Image 1 (spheres, rainbow, N blue to C red):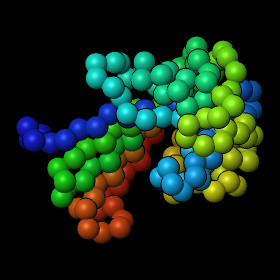
Image 2: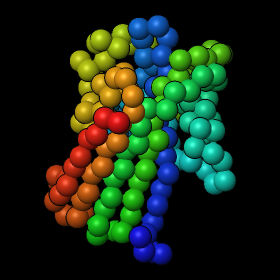
Image 3: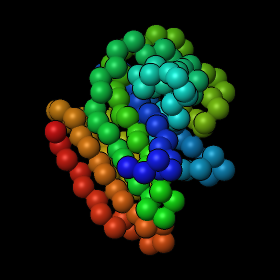
Image 4: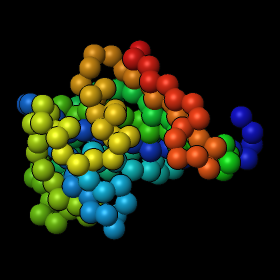
Length: 158
């Protein structure tokens, strides 16, 4: 990997409460409109897990108490020499109350079995079921920065 490769570390964490998952309904002006999990950039020098915990707290008001690592999404853009690495978790324990005015959009507890009926970005819809399967996953997508579709794509269950 070249020294000038830009690497951005991110997290996503789906909070579970029994058979329900907490999703954020993001408005179009926030980017990535539709339903999505809590997450965002890893702040240097925090750990990946600490970032997931912080992002859930900032976006929902909940403090997650038990994280389970589910997998890695890796998006590379060849024209920008950039790589985005998203570390994915589920949280099966939490404390606190939901924010009344969440910063990223409305919060909604949704039955996991019904979540894919909601509007969401294609990339999130594609990986959502992977959070609930046994083991971990790795998603790798490579773009050239010009075409809309990935040049190369792989999804592995590990």
